[in-house]
Amino acid sequence: MKEILLIFTLLTSISFIDVVLPNKEVSEKAVWPTYYYDTLSNPLTEDKIYLGRVLFYDPILSIDSTISCASCHSQYSAFTHVDHPRSHGVFDQVGDRNSPSLMNLAYQDKFMWDGAIHNLDAQALAPISEVSEMGETIGHVIEKLDRIPAYHELYSKAFGSSEITGEKTLKAIGAFMATLESKNSKYDQMMAGTAEFTEQENNGYNLFLSNCAICHKEPLFTTNEFVWNGLPLDTALNDLGRMKITHLSMDSLHFKIPTLRNVEFSYPYMHDGRMKTLRDVLNFYTSELPFENTEIDHRLNQPIILTDNEKTDLIAFLLTLTDKEFLFNKKYSFPFDFFFPSTKDE
Amino acid sequence: MKVFLLTILSLVFTPYFTQKEIEINFEMNNENPELEISQLRYYISSIQLTSNGKTTFTEATSYHLIDHNDSNSTSISLRLPEEIEYNELQFNIGIDSSKNMGGVHGGDLDPTNGMYWTWQSGYINFKLEGKIENKEISYHIGGFMYPNNTCRTTRLKISGKGSNYTLVVHPDELLQKVDYEKINHVMSPGVSANLIADQLPSIFTLK
Image 1: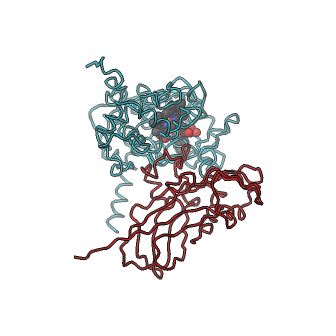
Image 2 (image 1 turned 180 degrees about the vertical axis):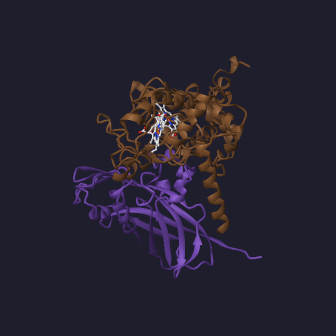
Image 3 (image 1 turned 60 degrees about the vertical axis):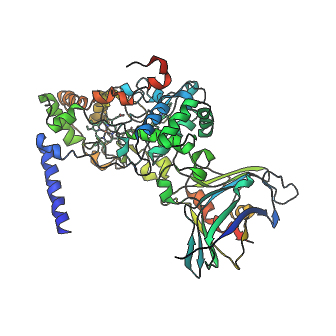
C-alpha cells in the first residue's frame, strides 16, 4: 500500500512539472490507456474488420439505400460531417445534433454526446433505426444483406459461417470502428521527439495546458466525462444532453467532452454545431462563459483570459493535432475492391 | 467415473387472464375490464433450481426470449442430472447488467428480435402492448444501470419431480397493480419502468 502511495505521489509531481515545462521528457506521461473495448468478446480479426469497413460504407444500411455511415462520418474530415451544423439523413431530414468525429473509440466507455450508448458494438443500431438518419430496422437490413452472395462470403470469412445475423453485423461494424486510431499528429511526433513545435505552437501548448487540458486531457484530449462547459441552452432544440439518459437534473446540459484530435476538421463545433471556427470557440471560452453560474463545471469557474495573439497561438497548437496519416489511411477508406471488383485500382 | 443420467424438465409459459387461458391477439370483449393484448414478450434468464435454499442446478447460458405470438418460443427445456434435488425454481425476468454491458449478443439475444433499444443501448426485458378499456397501453420495460435496473428475480415453490411444469403469467394482475390510466406508455428506463418491474415477479405462478 505504501509503495502504491509513493508511486502515486511521484506520478502527480511529474505531471505537475509537465504543466509548467512541456518538453521531450514528458512523452512518458502521454501513455495511452488500455482499451476499454472488449477484444475478448469481439476479437479484432482482419476479416471481421474488413467486413465492418464494407458495411460502414454501404448505403444498403439505410431505408432507401442513399445514406451510409460514411455519409455523416467521412474519413477526410476525421469521420465527421463538415458541411452542416447538424446531421442530414434520409429524405433530407435534419437531426438534432452535430455528428462527432470518430477516432480512438476503443478507449471510450460511452458514446454519443449524451452517453446513450455504452458499448461500441451496439452503436450502429442507433443511426440505422433513427428515422432522421438511416430510417431502417436491423431486421430488414439483415434481409437485404442476405440477398447478396458477396456478403455471405465476407461473413463466412469473418465468422466461420455465412449466416447473416444482427449480432455479427453489429460486431463487424464495431470492430472496424475500434481500429480507427489517430496517434500520429505533429503533437504525437513532438512527444516522441521526432518533430519540434514552433515557438508559436509551443506557446499555444502552454496556454492549452493551463486552461483546457484538465478536461481535454492528453493523450485522448478528453477525460470522457459529461459536463456543462457553460454553453447556453438553444431553446429551439431544447437539448438537455445527459439528463435525457439519467433523468437527473444535475446532469442538465451536460455533454461529452469531445476529443480535440483532428479538431481542424470537426467544425462546426459543439453538440449542435453552433460555432463555425476555432476562434469562435475561443471567444466563447474567454468572453461568454457564465463562470459565475454555480452550475458550470468547477474547472471553468474562473474567467479564462487570452489576448488575441494568445488565441492565435492556441489555435496554432490545436492544428498540430491534425493527423494526416489517419485522414488518408487506406485501411479506413472506401473499399473499392468490394464495390467495384472489376475496376480494382492498385 | 461417474455417469450422469440426464432428464429433461420442461417449463411451458402460458398467459392466463382471470383464471382463463388467453390467446394473444384475441379480443376479450366480454371480460371486464376489457383487455386486448397484441404483444407479450419477455426474457427469462439465469434459471436455477434450489433445494432448501442451496443451488443444485444452474442452467448454462441461460437466456430465453418468450414471445407469446410465437408458440415455438414458449417452452424451455432444462437438461439436468437425474439425482438432483430441488424444491424451488428461480429465474430472472430480464437481462442482467453484466450481459448488457457486454454489448450485443446472438441467438435469443440478437438485436433483430426487437428486444433491444436502438436510441439508447440495452435490452428490453419485458414488453406488453395492447388495449385496455379501449386505451392503448405500451410497456417496454428495461434499464440496467443503477438506480434504473429493471431485471428482477422470482422464486417459485416447486413440488414433486415432474417433467413438465406450466408457468402461468398473469398480465391482468400487472394491470391491476399499475395505474394504467396514468402510466400507459413506458418506453425508457426510469421511475415508471422500475415500478412495473417491481410487479413482474408476482405475475408468474407455477401450476
